[in-house]
Structures are given as structure tokens and as C-alpha cells.
Image (cartoon, rainbow, N blue to C red):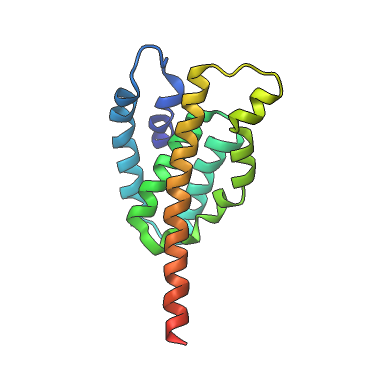
Length: 152
């Protein structure tokens, strides 16, 4: 619970008062602490924790700021866990189409809704961090497949 509270910083602060760099400065130690914890857990104890963070970020309120934090965290986990992260990446890959669709600025503008610059920046950050996670996860998965294929 304490780590979730720390990870919630981005969504709980006024972004008019803090720069993105200041938010990252506060968020990075929470992500580092979570990553260190993950390295000490078994798969069976880490999976429910990661699922809880996923639910907190993407299922509970649809908060884009929480989603950004989740994908920043997931990217750091992927870098630390390496090929083991592929065991957990499926949770966010399965919702890729929905995430991209919900943040498609052209689609939203074509529906007659005005999109302000702040919303565009948030959507851009969200998609950027999602792309990092997806790209890294897919490269790990591809490397595992290539290794398996070369041994056959």
C-alpha cells in the first residue's frame, strides 16, 4: 500500500505547479523501490502484486497519469527482470488496442471534441511509455524464440 501511495504522486499533484521533470524526480525513487522489491520476490508472489498495480493504474479510474506511472514502472521492471518480464507483459499487451484507441487524438478530434494541449501531452507521454514497454517486451520475446529455434 505504501508503494502504491508513492506511485500515486503523479496523479495526485497539480501539474500546473510542478514541471514533468519535478514529477519524475519524486516518482523515480518509488519506481526504484518497487523494482528492488520485485527482484526479491518469487514469480508467484510478484504476479498478484503486479496485477494489483495494473488494476490500480488502468482499471480503477481510467486515470491517464496513473497509466503513465504504470508504464514507466513496467519499463524499469522489464530492464531489471529481462527475459523474466515476458511472463508478466501479457497483462498490458492484451489491452493494447483499447489503450491506443482511447488515446487516438485524431479520432477524438474527428468526433467533434476539442483536445487541449495538456491532454495531448498526457496522451503522448502515455503512448511513449507504453511503446517503450511493448518494444522491449517484444524484443525479449523474439530473442527467446530465436534462441529456442537455433537449438532445434
